Each structure stands twice: as structure tokens, then as C-alpha cells.
Amino acid sequence: MVKRIYIDNFRCFVNLELHLENINLLMGPNGSGKTSVFTILETLHRLISEGEKINDLFKSESLTRWQPDAMLQKVELDVSGNGGTYRYSLEVEHLSHRQTARIRNESLFFDAQPLYRFNIETDETGASVGTGRLYNDNPTHPGIPLPFDWARSGLYMVQERHDNKRLTWFKTCMERLIIAGIDPHAMHAETREARTRPAWNFSDYADWLDHLADEHRREVGLLEGELRKIIDGFDIFRFQKAGEAKILKAEFVDKTMFRLDELSDGQRVMIALYTLLYSLHEGTLCVDEPENFLALPEIQPWLDTLFDRLAEFPAQVILISHHPRVVNYLAGHAGFWFSRPEKRHVRVQRVAEAEDTGISLAKLMELGWIYDE
Image (cartoon, rainbow, N blue to C red; front, top):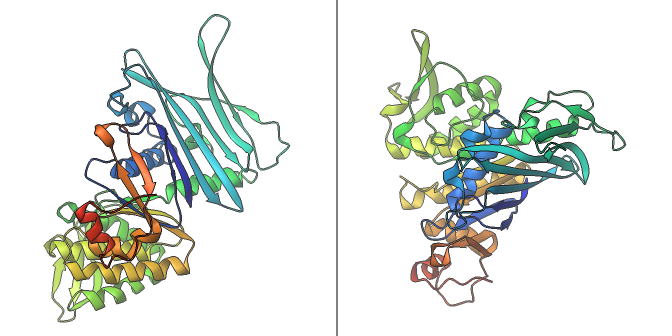
């Protein structure tokens, strides 16, 4: 579970520190930085789990605009689990008039024990030299030198071994991080290759369900049972061969079948949302405005199922929402209010418990009367 995020000099974040629980609701006006929290988590996933280059992830446009001389971006992530707390730290340095970026410092600790370190130092000739060191699970291990390319995360290059289970656990946690901003118009029905994780917009939902159907058949069966309750006439999913590809279809009780992309926007969003819940066992799930494309009463059953799943599994959920049902359900004990005074850097405060005014939290937010601690 992500316990703490620290971000500095990234987009609208300057020295932002966010402490999270197992369920969290991010609220605030448009442009206040809520989705950018998801962006930094997705960026770290792509850096650590997929090995993407730092230049492609931390472009010069991501530097905070009103700090023209600040060329160093910092991110820290505290993750609890595996019997302790991890701290991942990253410093990205921009060079050559913002045309190039490189990793200046990267480290991973477990309960203050180093698992991996890299930093750039200047030698006696003034040249920059990168030095990396890899440690194992033994606290007294002195570490071994690690070849390093400062264009990519060193953690991505470390392979699983019998003596680095702690580092491997953290990498697996980052691999399981799911960020969802579901766009039903992007969800296609064709799959050619199973995927273990969906894209942000769920364009590859069929690829992901193909993986789940093979590796987590019981959960897909539970998902289909839930969808029978909320989609009139739905029965099961079927994959039909179409040359080298497969087409995901929904079969209804009258034996009619529809391609995924022939279903309504609302039906596709409901399918995606409930798939997220029934794939949820551990790790962190981030959902951006789950109520989009849904009718007002449809979000409450999903929230109820969400709480049931969180009671069953050690998972974490971070939601962004303006929906009155979501706000009234979560804001009083799990809400964070984002604001950007004078359109500068983001400020975040926990939402205070509202006094008994007879007005709901959602209405107070709508009126601009919701208050923070």
C-alpha cells in the first residue's frame, strides 16, 4: 500500500507531501492537480516495471513553470508491506537547456536498510560518474557494484534472485499498480496478445480480460455473476476466433451476442469498473472519475462492492470524483481537498468532518462551503 508520496518540481507540484490510507478520495476544482498524482504513479510504474527511458518520462515540459532555474525533480514513494516499509527515492536532473534528462539519484530502502543505490558524482577531472550498488536481503551485506545507465532505472535491470526477495517484492508491487481513466469509446473488442495490466484508458480491455480468463478463471466467473445483476440479460463473456485474433463478445441469456464495442458506453464502463474490483487482491488501484457515463444510482452498488472487496483483501484504492454519492460516502473520512491558490503550486488538505448542518458534504462542496482542517 502506498503510504506517502512526495513530489517536487513536477508540473504544478512543489514540495507536495500526501499521506494515504487504504481508501482515499481526491477532490477539488478542475486543474488542481488530482490527475497529476495518478500521472506520477503511472510514470514510476513505466520507469521501474517497463524500463522506459527517463528522457521519455520526465520531459522538460513537466518542470514547474514558475521555477525557471530549478532543474532537479524529486519524487519519493513510501510503500508498506512485506512486513515493513519501503522508501523509493528518485532525482531527475535536466541538462543542456532542458533538452536532456538523466537520473541523478535513485535508491530503495526497506526499514532503513539499503537494497539499491545509485548516484552521480563528479570526479577529479570534473566529469560526471555514475555509481550503483546492489544489496541483498542480509542487513550486513556490503553491496556489490552495479553497472548503470543513467537513462533508465537500475531497479528495472535487477533480476529476481534467491537473496533479493525484498527488492523483488517492491518491483512486483509497482507492476500491480493500476491507473484507470476509463474511456468506453477507446475499448476495442479485438485481442491478439494477453496483457497483465490494462492501459490507462482501457483501450486494451479485451487483452486484459484474456489474461484474467486464463490466470484467474474463478474471479472472472464471479465477475460474470455480478454483471448478471446489473446488466439486463447478460450471461457470460466469450472469445471468438477471427483469423489470428480473437473477438471479445458478451453473450446474453437469449443467446444473442454483441461485440464489446457494440455495447453502450455505460455498459462498457460498468464492465470495466467491476472487472477492476474482481481483479483486486492486493496492490494499489487508482480510478479517475468512475462515475463517468453512468446514471446517478449506478455508482452506489459499485461502491458497496468496493468496500466488500477491501474487507476481503489487503488492497488500496485511490479515487478522483465529484459525484455526490461518492463524496457523501467517502469525503468525511477519506477525503483530500486539492487547490491551487493563484494558479500556482498545489495545496492538499484533509477534508474536515462537517458539522451537522443538515446539508450533505456534496452540497457543501457544490456551494463552496466545504471546509478543510
